[in-house]
Length: 211
Figure: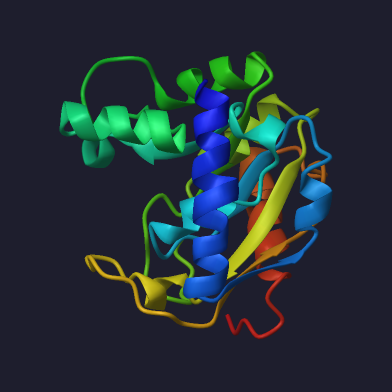
């Protein structure tokens, strides 16, 4: 039942809405992504629309087992919001390290990976200014260092921060796109080197990026 709900929301409703009404385009290796059994999508982050657009790129079979990772303090502060986020977005809500007791975020994510599930991670940790990349957290490096058998899929997102800017409630049509790289395994061995490898893979998808 949950798989059908996710398919209706993202493949039948959200995907066409984002493409036709808001002008979002999917580019690069997004079709190849549908052939992957398990993966970690890593992308820059400027808007809540980013998650919706990434979920809309998945196949019927991938949707149920792919989870965006989000902060519990934001999406879980009210029970009804946490439920909606988990049910309709398939999100894993995690607590940051400074937010008290409970399972560590990376331990929670590792349990899902061990079950064969996939993740959507924004290594910046939160939404930044449009077209400006923030520093990456090391969590993605730790996960890939512990799971070298799982490929990461880099995605460069542009324009969504102007469709639905941080703090805004209404969307505005704007030219936006998601450029998908091919699924790839990490070549680096150390956590910080892996973080840099992932960051460069994302930046390389944007030919117009100026450091």
